[in-house]
Structures are given as C-alpha cells and as structure tokens.
Length: 359
Ligand SMILES: [Mn+2]
Image 1: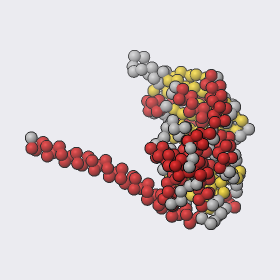
Image 2 (image 1 turned 180 degrees about the vertical axis):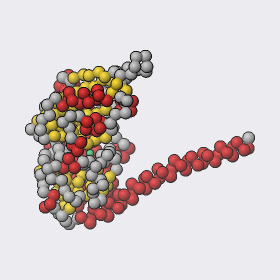
Image 3 (image 1 turned 135 degrees about the vertical axis):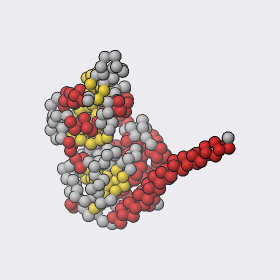
Image 4 (image 1 turned 120 degrees about the vertical axis):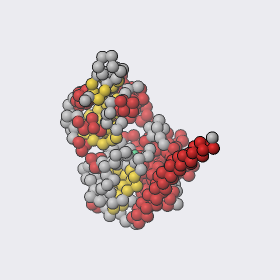
C-alpha cells in the first residue's frame, strides 16, 4: 500500500509540470515576441511608413492598419480596392485609404493581415515588416521582422502591441480594431479567448458600444443575406458517398461569406465562385470531420484544380482561396472532378457510405 501510494504520487507531480511548463513558455514566448517586435517597430515612428493591406482589404486588415497608422503615423494602402463591406468603417473612422501605392516611395512597409505575396499584387514590396494571423503564412520568412501568431484576428495582435507600448487606442482606432475582430470571427461564430477579451477591452477603452460596431455592417448584411439566400437556393448539390457538397456561383464579391454560410447551413464542403470585373475569386471550406476522414487539405485540392496556379492559392487545411485576373470557365466543374479523383467509395459492406481517400 505504502509503496503504491508513493509511486502514484510521483508521476502525478511530473505530469503537472509537463503540462504547465510548455504552457508557461508559450505564453512567455508570445510576450517576448511582442516586446521584441515593439522595439523594432516603434523606431519607425517619424519615417514614411506604408501599412499595406492584402487586396480586397477586409475590416481586419484596414482596422489593424488604421490603428497602427494612428499610433505611429503613416499611410494605409491597398493593392487595388478595399472590400465593399468596409465602406461604412472607412466613413465612420474617417480613415484615408490609398489605392495601389508604390512601396518604393516609402521608407518602410508594414504588411498587415496578408499570408501570401499574391494578395499584394500588382506591387509586392521587396523589404517589409509583417503583422499577421493567418495559418500557413508564406510571407513570414521573407519579412525583416514579424509579429506573427495564428490567432483569430490581426486586430488583436495590434492591440497586444498598443497595450505593451502603453498607447491605448482612441475612439476611432478602437472602433476599427473591434470591427476587425467582429468580422474575422464571423460575428463571433468562432473565436479564441483573446478575441472575446480584446473586443470587450476595446469597447471599454474606446467608449464604443457593441451596437456602434454592429451598425457598420447593417446595410451590407441585408444585401449579403440576399446573396447568400440566392446562392443557397441556386447551388449545385453533389453527394459524394454521404458527404454533402454545395457549389455556387455568385455575382457579388463576397465569396468567403457565402462559402462560410453554406457550411453553416450543413454542407460538408462548400465551394463558391465569383466572377466579375475584378476577375475570379473562389473560396472553399471543408468541415473538419470530412477533412480528417478523407485526409483532405483544402489548399492542396485547390492547387490541383486545372487552370489554377500553385502560387495563387492561400489558406489552410479547411479553407482555400484562389484569385485570378481572368474568368476561368467551368471552374466549379473542375473542382468537383478534382475532388472525385481523390476520393473513392468504400467497398460494399465495409464501413459507412462515407468516401475515403484513394490509395
Ligand atoms: Mn484577418
């Protein structure tokens, strides 16, 4: 009895240390990363800084850039156009957004909320700092220095910086950062603990109400809902085994919202294509259960679709995005064919009706 008690006590102490030490060091690592980046970026104050968002900049990219520009001074830029849904945010904060800026004309460039060089075209800067949260970021290794953490939004990373600098955002910057968190969490459909906490802190420090932030998206939400309803009712429903795949073409440039909504509706995979004057935009979501069971990677599938170049896709295992300057006929047919070529129905009498990876 005595021996057993002794031996059972020792592993439990060890186990507790094993869990706590990595967590502590992760947290400490994040704090150190903020301190190091803060010391670098605060030196840029007074110089000509370009805060460069990804193209079709969303509220997270613009909100983060605007708060940084308010703090350090500088210019908020987008490669071509900001996303339509940011119109009221831009109005409400009075932020100036420069379209197609020349990175060469600035002393330093801070790339904000971008994961891939294709999102910065037509003018990809040679040297840049980076603040971003996208999983699988392909710019982080090329950056002079980066604040990179795959959390829910870039805006919460900027808030970490401002807090560490003792430079709390004012009303407009708080509204902009809160807007970025609200939209990147898809109105809190998802989100880590820090996104909820930071959102609350921003309302408090900025003297902003939740309604103030939501109001920025009311108009567009009505329009978006109509686009989503039309896409859902007109979507092509493909059954692969027991998986439900919804494919839809839309005429309004909100493919990410629509693809997400189709997933929320119950699809195992949603693929939405937009074609318009800006070119082609395709977004794909794969539900975790299907990605695991079929060992699928959304980015890998998208890159394998005929007509899609490998460098034009970004995302992570459950989400892929593709942008191209021209129309690509029958792209949704190609996506479904690519998917079918990778999956196989299980043999009769073996397992369920779910498709499995080929080979
Ligand atoms: Mn973002």
